[in-house]
Amino acid sequence: MQFSFRLPVATHVLLCLDKFQGVEKTTSTFLAGSVNVNPVIIRKILGRLKAAGLVAVTPGVGGATLTRDPKDITLGDVFQAVEDEAELFHFQEHPNPNCPVGRSIQRVLVPKLAQAKAAMLAELKAVTLAELAAAVDGDTPL
Image (cartoon, rainbow, N blue to C red; front, side):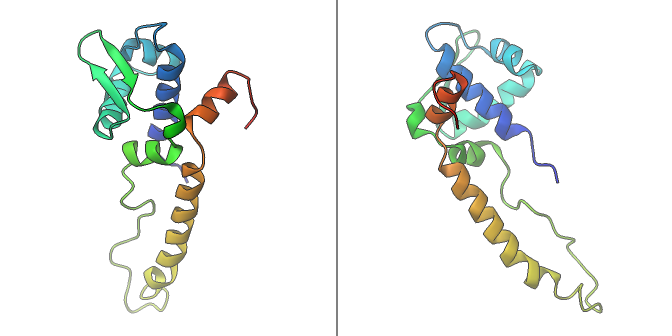
C-alpha cells in the first residue's frame, strides 16, 4: 500500500523552515531544491500548511516561516494539514450483496481499519518537529 507523499514532503519543508529561518530566504524554489521536487509541489504543500495555521507565507520572493514553535507541531498536525484523510482505506462501494463476504466485508473490516488509523494518528501525534530537527542536526537519535 502506498500513501501520499505529502506528509514526508511537508515535514521536510517544515524542517527546512526551522533550520534556515533567518539564514536563507525560504522560498518555494529554495525549498524545492532541498526536497528535489518542482516548486509548484512546494507551493501546494505550503498552501495546505498555511490553511492549517502551521506556516505564514509572504507572496513573491518573501518566503515562508513557521507560525508555531517546533515543539508545538506534531507529525499528526502535519498529517491532518496535508493529507486527505477522510478515509485512508477505500472500499468497493457496492460489493455483491448475494455473496456472504460481499455483504459483510464493510461491517467486519471498517472497525479494524478505524483502529489502525487511530493507532497511526496517535503515533504521529507523539512526534514533534523539534524532535525531528534535533535528529536531523545529529543531536539526538530517534
